[in-house]
Length: 309
Ligand code: DON
Image: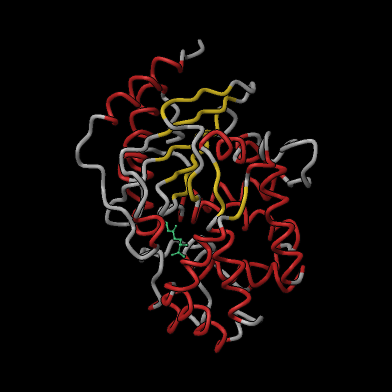
């Protein structure tokens, strides 16, 4: 039996649009603090290719840490499994920007989705590709994953704002450089990392970008690089265990899907073999994950039975 998604998405959107408590905008990245907290978008791409949209699903927003999913994918395909000598695969139980574990753990981050781990992934991409090529290839990769990729772009103002105020990330990169976990010029690594975070995409495009995770790596697009099924499975596993930082356990309990959040208020969630879902609501909960985005996914899996757990 197939579920009729349109009325479900309409009902979820109507319900959450009325909500007063919408979470808190991130203050440490000025352009993100100025986004309208009433925005709400939802896009569901089904395995048969049907796309369902609701609310502000066609409006571009800053994908922030959701880009860590795609950077990890690209690194596994270009650097290979030696990546795992520089970053581990374990949940951190700590905040996304935490520095404390690095001291006792030889400068090796717990996973590629906390900021420290993502900076290492970017460092590895730069080692492999060089600075300019890494900038170019990451954007090309993201465009190849979406159907109208030309509109996917780096928002230079957001990248600059992060560079000007990202003192914690500067500390993480320099600290890891002292252990040799980060090997390239830290300014160059951070510039690329901030550009990745500053990609703007719509919910529709983000859902498309998760197609390879829904299909287990098969045929992400006609233009893009091949993605091994092993890579897709690995990335989805890390999303399940680490995709929401110190909120990963409660996200698994509430939603039960591999998911990745960003401080722009987006979440990408995957129903293996069935759907790729993107939701956007800019206000965040205490762990820096979209408050109403999480609730929307919870309502969606309750209505569809899509939780993998
Ligand atoms: O590096 C940062 O702090 C931001 N560019 C990204 C953090 C983020 O998205 C955390 N996610 N919920």
